[in-house]
Image 1 (spheres, rainbow, N blue to C red):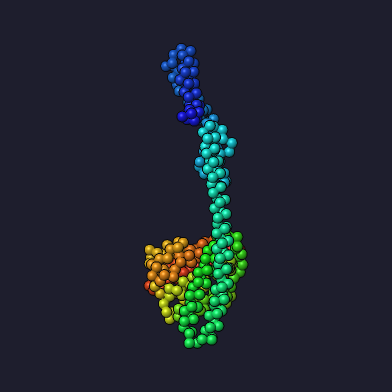
Image 2: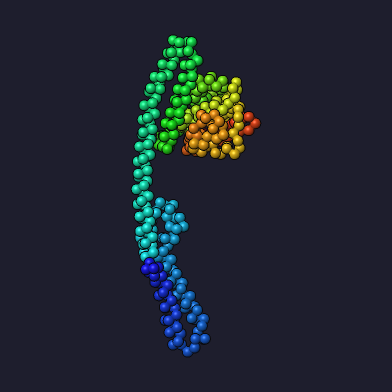
Length: 331
């Protein structure tokens, strides 16, 4: 109540001036009827003066509420004058202090979490590499147990892929800090990823078919783009039909990755890019993590490469548009 009275004190003063002082002036004149227009004019002038001074005193608050203060990063009213402004500014300062404190704690927690994930993944990769070497050695020593060792190798490959995906996810929050734009040979980059997935192609009996020309260059970040291609090709193999091929084609600034197999329901096309969303096929196969396409979306959005996913008639096509980056580089 006290704050309300202080905020409306100017209204009370205006009321007193208008209905007491002005009436006193009019009474000194000969007849109020003859000066009725003068009375209205004087009241309007006083109201206009009052509104003008009130607007000037609170202009910064109005600008702030219209969003101008937020555009410049100012969360508080500069030099509050009125009592209501001062009370509002005090409230905002206390809220801002709490938010900044929570933000600092959250950043520290994220850094600790990223460090823990990174160290854990690296510690697990060392014994995993040793296990893979032992598998290769025992496959040569014990040909009779080749099938069993292949099963062990398959599970190790799954574990290695999951660790790689987890490490990439933990680093994805700082993509911009690790971006290096450079000319990239599309064919060589795709071939590197295909070689990394060679065993996976053979195991699933799916074969790569690249029709990319030799001299095609794009401008992007090689490291992060390889993560995208790796994820898309592994998905194409995972959900592709046996004895089929994965087509990798580049034309008119667009990279196409197409596989034959089960299609993605139309209702899930947009949701497959959400974090931890596995979809119908992911639940059936039980191998999906719901991280891969989320990383693809995040990386491509950060690098400003438009993308499109379509799935129908036993075909799934993922398209990445590099035409904008080529135009930018040409300029």
